[in-house]
Image (cartoon, rainbow, N blue to C red; front, side):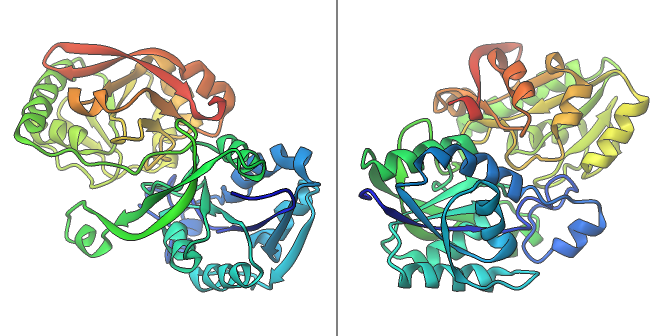
Length: 374
């Protein structure tokens, strides 16, 4: 635990999250493609939402950071004192994340606070060693267990850490196995272990994948029920996940791995849809619904792995036109559902008791919370 005058290494992966809205499943190595498709960097605004909440602790924290968009610019915007220990190029890469972290370790930081996704977490954890790390969620997936539930939760955790109020826990850094993914198999891979400040609710659990014959039976029941109510002529936006994939299987539609697809009357309208394509669809169609499944152990239904379903998309569809599906076991392992669209007003509108389809014509009620309000 840190003492007063904590030294915190801070860095941003400037391209984190760009690939989500444009239907790329990550951004590492794909930044130019994401930008050409209209992807917008969101890491700086996510980092700023965290840092500006720490302005009241500026006398107790010295930030060590990289130059420009990798950290210094954002700290200056929030009027936080910092020491620049790494000079980053105009277009940074994973090498710069690694070298910045090496500089942080050489300076003896108490904590590395980074803004990015699972790829950034891998790079940071590979250097951090026994130094604790904490992620401000800004990537496409965030399956690892080092991410705060929201930028606001990250600020709370940093503040408590500096005051010596938190213990550390060891957690897993995971990411999608890209080699298997290219062959059409979704499987996460363990890359490292890391220490992170921990407080239940404020830190996301590592994503879990539930697999058993009973799970498969419930997915089949959910899919059968969905195949019936989806015959009403409405357009359905089908989110990512193994449960929604089972719905597509029963309909005879090829589901995009980790993607978002649009279906009407059992026919695939848009495969692997981007935010732009969804907004174009919603500009001419009124009767549209979204089917979502929560991330295992984390509980997020929006804001993780499905940034195509942006705040604008959800607003146009309508908060009453979200259909949530989950197997009973997965739902029981989640204390509540979470939303983190980046739009606080919308997140609060989505909060409350929501119905979750858990079987054939069977549903349970579950609390939904805005992650930024935890």
